[in-house]
Structures are given as C-alpha cells and as structure tokens.
Amino acid sequence: MPQYAVPTPPFPPATDSFSRRCALLGGIGLLALPASGRAESAAPNPAMASSGVWPQASQVPGGLARLSLGSAAERPVAHLRGADAVVPLLVLGDVIEWTALVGIPLAAVPGAASISVKTADGGQRQLSYVVAPKRYLEQRLKVAPGTVDLSPEDEARYERERAHLATVMATFTEPLPQTSLRMRVPVPGRRSSSFGLRRVFNGQSRNPHSGMDIAAVTGTPVLAPLPGRVIDTGDYFFNGNTVWLDHGGGLLGMMCHLSKIDVNPGDVLKTGERLGAVGATGRVTGPHLHWGVMLNRTMVDPALFLAV
Image (cartoon, rainbow, N blue to C red; front, side, top):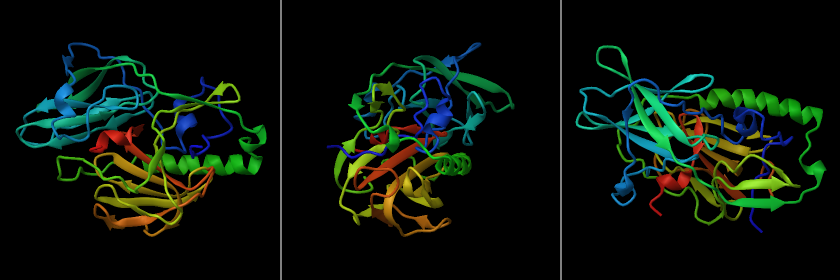
C-alpha cells in the first residue's frame, strides 16, 4: 500500500482558497494572470528535455515555464503578478542569454498567462506564455472521519504554523551562480506517491499531492539535492520534522517526516551533504520522505529537476 502524508485537515472543500488548502504542504500558489496589452509570446521548447537542460520545461499546472529574456549586460528583473502579491522570478543565464523560470501552480487555469520584465529604461514589458491542461492520477480512499478532524488545540497549532511557513515560503535571495539546476534524488527508494496525485477521501475531493514521496527505511540519510542554505527547521503538525532549504532565487526545497534533523538554520550545504534521516513523524502511514520543490512560492514537480 502506498505511503502518503494525510492532506491538510479539516479537508476544506474545493472552493476554499488555494493558499489555505496547501499552506502546510508548501503550496501558497499564485495564479498567473492572462496576458494583456502588446505582450510578446514565448513558445515552449520540446527539445529542452533531451538537451540536458534542467529543470525541464513543462507548461502545465504543477510544472514550469522557461522563458527566454534575450541578451542583456545585467541579469534582468522579472515578476509574476498574483492575486495577492507581485512575486520575483528566478532568472538564470549570462549576458548572451537570460532565462526566467516560472513555477505554475497546480490550481492554475489552462490558457494564456504572462510575466513582467523590467526594461533598461525602467519600464515594463509583458512576456506571454500558455499553460496547457494536464490530468493527474486520482486515488480514492476511505478513512475514519476522526482521523482527519482537528481538535480546537490542533487547529490553533495549525494556524500558527501556517502563518510562520508563509514567511518561510516568501524567501527570495540572489540566484546561485550555476546555470543548471539538475538535482540529485535526496534519498534512494521507491517513489510511493507522485506529484499531483488527486485524492478523494470518503467521496470528497481534496487537495492534490504537492511533492514526491520516496519510501525508505527509517534512519536512511537524507541529502541535499542542490547547494543551499537551511532557512527553517521544526516539528510541524502535519509534516513532522521538516527542513527547508534555500537554493537561491526563490527556489526552495522542503524535506518532511524526518526521524532526525542534523542541521540548523543558517547552515550552508553542498550537494550530497546530509541534512537529516527518513522517518514517520507528522501525519503519515509509514516511513518515507516527502520532498517538495517550490519555485516563486508555488510547489512544482520535483521530477522536472531530475535526470531520470
């Protein structure tokens, strides 16, 4: 039976805000707005996946867009305007070619979207792209109602943690100098639950899975998938022992359900350095690592950063 983290109770209906439904699992998402005015068009590059460039482009909900910004003497500044905020975007490259990476929320509506890019004269230009539809797998489960209902004390704890994690997920620092963001798998094991899996509990649809679950024995070392700085550690109600990594430019990593945390906020890790160990803390059915990757404050599919 696949191991998974129970989604955020008290199972709010699909009409609730996306930020509340996904807050503790790393999903304060911002919808891309339709392009307006005389926006340029950025077409997806089908050859990206076979060209050895990471992350791979996948312009679907839960994926990401790679948008060419052309040449410039300095790194361009690009933003995505969401419902509640203007969010800075990760821009990689060099003076010959700059590329904006745009994380697309699982809740994004397929269709036209755009980002804003600051011009040399201080103005703004719009760069448009298209989000294609994608249907994720669905899992139907029957669970006891008492396993998901929160007590008033637990609900209060959830709200405190949600407010704290909102500040963690807003972290934006200078991008790392590397141009390739190919990641290593943080722990060996079977992928027991895929990103985007939509779960139906007792006949009611709930929020989709916002990360990659990797089944492994308790105590298996968890390693940094990319260089990064530890920006948060803690024991959270749903996610258990958790480590957040800042990979630069709004690219964050989240490791959940750890049996042990071996790092502290402020620690700087190289790729492959240990940060903790696999466990079953928080609300889970068995030992595994829940690995989330966040880009411009929205969770995206970690598989897009892997070679296999």
